[in-house]
Image 1 (cartoon, rainbow, N blue to C red):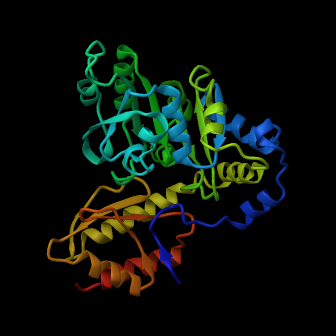
Image 2: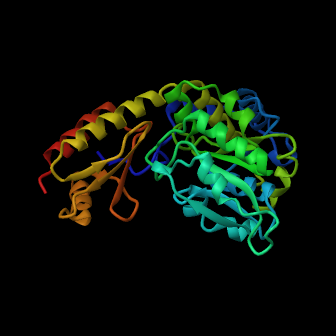
Image 3: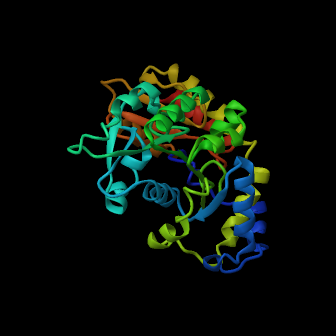
Length: 341
């Protein structure tokens, strides 16, 4: 039995989700005639109090579309140095939008208003790129599933408003933050110009991200999606999976969070571990002691039918998810306790 903890994207549709997919009402979404897509977009927009929503095949495409909507070539966005839009979207910021990134630091992938303010280029100094956008990520990926304090997000919004900047949220795992902190989605919808919401991570669908935003921000979203190759036809089969996930998989994210915390607690007790980051949601980031070989450790796990991710520079990642069963959980904890290295 393989225990795959590399990412929450490795899940397979549940039986109930497969039935929803098979029974979906579909049409041609390029003509906006797919009833399931229209229903998902309307539901997500209503949840967040957003003006508009648009279904995308991937989170990266939705983020890239948002950046394109908010910027012009030669401008600059501000984001954390670990941000997904910079590290894991194939250089799309520069390729698709002709935009550069001003990278800033912050604990566990989180940025603050003061650091954002300091990173803004003077708008009348034509030698530097014009700052036009701030991107934040909640929860943080490389930061170990850390959640923003909502007050910090509001303070960044104030900086954006005072400086004429747009504000985008990479909400690939925002569902986890909402569940963890019992937050109201409408608070987020009122704060950001655009938000990308992924369904193929914690919610377990095969594909799909919904980009939501204000009417002004989204007015060219269909065109940009088309330019990026994101126009799809009978994609209501996947939208039906998203609707099913909202009904059945949202609250169960608490189980993923509980499992991650138990794994983190287990790791802290092991002699081969140097450091374990706080586990707020479904991601565990940890580091081996200097004398412990990462290759040897990964091979030991592989021999025991366990897969996890290496994020470079000694950082290892475990992600709990829908297909990580209670039996797997107990087995994995035993494996961690039994490693002698």
